[in-house]
Image 1 (spheres, rainbow, N blue to C red):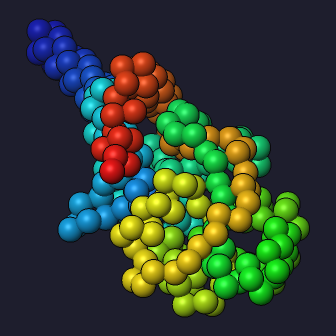
Image 2 (cartoon, rainbow, N blue to C red; image 1 turned 180 degrees about the horizontal axis):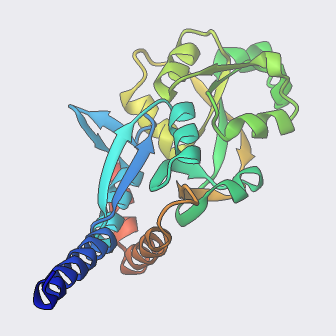
Length: 251
């Protein structure tokens, strides 16, 4: 092979390698998995939206990441993010037992969860705030399950389903007595999700442990976590996160 031709081939190869590296660095694709939990993440007319979804998309735009958002049942979304690189799951409570499993991006939102009980169930329990006296509906795999167990609720009093909407149906039909949600989440559900009005009591605060984050598979490209964290920090400093929250909670 002539030397000049070999040099040209080598140069082209180096340019191709550099272009490939720049594409990976500047156009990384992030697979973002979430579940139906309005107003944080939900699907409307085929579009995935919500408070946390909008924060994620704004962060991806700021970080120059291509972001592919998919809606799955929570347990499946969570388990997929555990095993697939360049994949995150949201909206995720950061808890001690989860700490080593993910790279944590955030916090994006505060976490304060409450027990919401049917008024007729509270009357049957004579106003008891002992949570073991109630039957709970939960989303399969969600962080409220260990919180309820720590509060003394036996496993046989906990019924798991695939989505927040499914748990709301259990509650509205009286098949469970109570569920766990944030104040923002339950206010949204009462206004838009419940097929028929029911009387609910905010029975007790369950947890203020941790906050809500984007939970990224730790085998993801290192710059992905760094870029996303820098973007979230910038959005918070600028007030953009507060503006997103207001769009969904203003009355």
